Image (cartoon, rainbow over all chains, first blue to last red; front, top):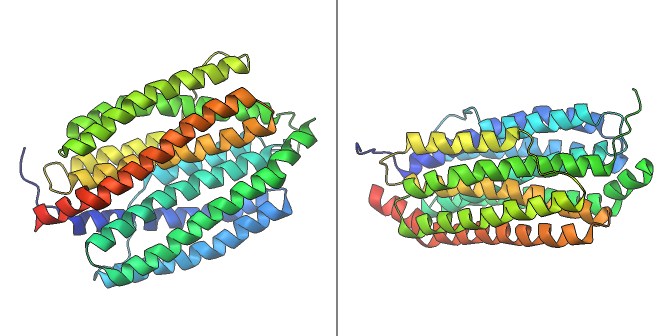
Length: 168
Length: 168
């Protein structure tokens, strides 16, 4: 096996490009999800997260700058697959009383992808001594975790109950 | 918009098929990841999770039985995308001292997808009053969370440090 000189800096940059691309895809998907949702609370949660995502993209641009690179995305098959599934749910359950429950689940799959990537990037930034990047990545990570918790609560307190009540 | 008679039972079954397919893909991917990993601890973590995944597939089959359905998968674009990214990392960082760090990150993306799906299925099973299914789904959810925590600790205590030390 040939020696490969790639370092943790390369891996960090590679994953930064991956999540930068993913966030931009999410930014495109969220308005469609907000429009499709029927529950006002779910619509609002998607709209709020869309605004947060804009800030998160800006933070990523700052992290690129901190390591002396121009912000650039790299095709992220994972987020494309996750969004593709969200689209299938929207089509398959359009007009059904359980559409919101399906949309909420899709959004949580998106959040968990982001939680895993920001968790990884934060750990690598710590290892690389990029303290200012750690701060920014941690802010976004906290927002993603918070969004996931909000969605879980909204599911359990309202959306899943409504899904079953309306379908009864 | 035409009324769509699909119910929470349909959404539950749809997502059960999604994760059943995903688990089978993960079962195929883990031995390759274990073989590629250079750290004995990471190899061991992947092998342990492979064994757990077999039990998790069996539990899913039990949940299918509880709702009177035959276990069947449905193509899950999300896991295909996540595994595709893991393969790219394995190729791009083959022979590099940071390969293990990349593999560990890929495995955490897989875990987080599973955490989101089992969390959703558990919430829906609760709503549907499928108490025995809730128990099984919760067991698997706890294992996935535990695997993710184990991987985070292994990353911070060893793999990320080694990645940087070897590359220096």
